Amino acid sequence: MSTEIVVFAVLFLLVSGMGFVAARWRRADNLASLHEWGLGGRSFGSWITWFLVGGDLYTAYTFVAVPALLFGAGATGFFALPYTVVTYPLVFLVMIRLWSVSHVHGLVTPADFVRARFGSPTLALLVALTGIVATMPYIALQLVGIEAVLKTMGVRGDLPLIIAFAILAAYTYQSGLRAPALIAFVKDALIYLVILVAVIYIPSKLGGWGAIFDAAQAKFDATPAPGDGILLNSNNQLQYVTLALGSAMALFLYPHSVTGVLAAKSRDVIKRNMSALPAYSLLLGLIALLGYMAIAAGIKPIGTDVNTVVPQLFDKMFPDWFAGVAFAAVGIGALVPAAIMSIAAANLFTRNIYREYIRPDATDAQEASVSKIVSLVVKVGAVLFILLIDPQFSIDLQLIGGVIILQTLPSVALGLFGRWFHRAGLIAGWVAGMGSGLVMLYNIANPATKHAHFGGSAFPLEKLGLDTKMTVYAGFLALAVNLIVAVLGTWLARAIKMAEGQDATRPDDYVADRDDPRVHDLEIAGSS
Amino acid sequence: MAAPRSDRSPWNWLLLIPIAIPLIPALYNTVEPRLFGIPLFYWLQLAFILLGVTATTVVYRMTRSRR
Image 1 (cartoon, rainbow over the protein chains, first blue to last red):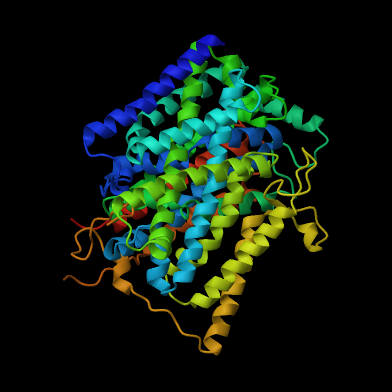
Image 2 (tube, each protein chain N blue to C red; image 1 turned 30 degrees about the horizontal axis):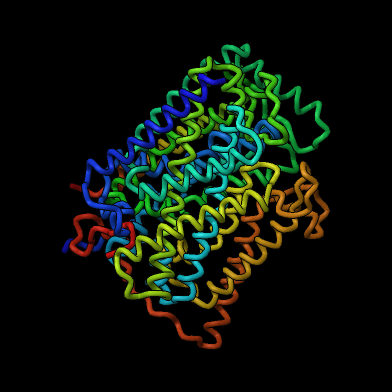
């Protein structure tokens, strides 16, 4: 046990420390301005974009939450794979338009775009708030990942969560966005190493893939739960599909994903990345199966915390020193994206709320310190999500975030393709979608803890009075409500001749590329 | 300035394939035939990654800006 902790601590400090050194070496300025705390207006080629975007997207979600879901519920958990297959072709044509219009008009956040497109400060404010709140449960998931590793190494009680929070807070406050971006390479290399070893070595120890799936089958056959098994059943297929598609639509609406995409050098860099990023999906699919390996290896979760099954699998199967390496990989794999997410959310606040509504004449130093404080607030929000929501599977933290962020899809994603919607309709749709989404989430029980509320993201259709046991991803239904209301609201607003907002963009802004004279470098951090 | 650019291209339709196929569970919700002991449900969905990579790569190559 002690070897593990030593290796973990040394690697963890070494890699996260490297970020600071590298950030300082590349530029000697201080971090007192938002400009420096953020990405600093740099634009990136294909390789760095691949690491930056991929590194944000594959997180503790991948290493801890997805395998835990397969461990507990079986085939349903594998939705994470079609999710990451579907998302890239889905956003391929969307993201290049966002890149173009953003670079022509100097837009940095989804809220900036909505404001320019629909001329509605209210809608922009809603989009900004949505991005900030939706990021919190996603960060919560990262904290849960670090927590699971610490628990497995023998840290008990409330201490794992407190330590995870302290590490993340200290790291973000000190580093800004550049340090996590610079260590993305090392982090990914470490993760690839651990996973390749895991998916080759562990199955060979457990008697091959056939034995692993047989063990999983036997476990699910023995449980009374009707929804589990190594295949889908007629009641959870709809949920599987809506989860995959809903998550795929949500992914690139998050502020941190948008930041990564906008930092790309050109439209071609984005396109090329959409075909290169699935390399991470292969990894994700293999990691997901660690959940079944844990079943075959007879792993029991620590207490009721299913998130500990993968760390415990590493603990049991690997020699101590390599388990330490694996824990460091999972820990850094959670820390880096959590830092990037909380900075992206904080910058969203500073740019679209603080500078817009509270202090239009703020200095760079003021903006930077507000951003730092907000990034702390966002992390406190993440901890509240952990303490108050407590869903059966930690993956639901991310899926709840998805329910929230999906409500910006009509104004952001559809807004990139046309301006058919009236801003009043979009606002009404947002209110209806967010309202119905939260009501649905409130009414989902957690069978493990017997809590009646906020227990997950699979909404049983029988609660709508339908005679069926089928469940569906709440975010998907909420988005449908949002769209219907937005359409009706648009008709109504046009019928009573409500004022249309001013559209600051022109059709050819959406196809401008790097060589276009109107395209300027972006100040990704938010100050200009 | 050159002729107005556009994102329209018939190649874009290819993107629909890797979006639609993985969302039809009827295509892959079985155990047999296994591959290296892995049920079809899992290996075929892993294989869909290739479908996604192929479609996005072809569309990228066919629609990238001329230099």
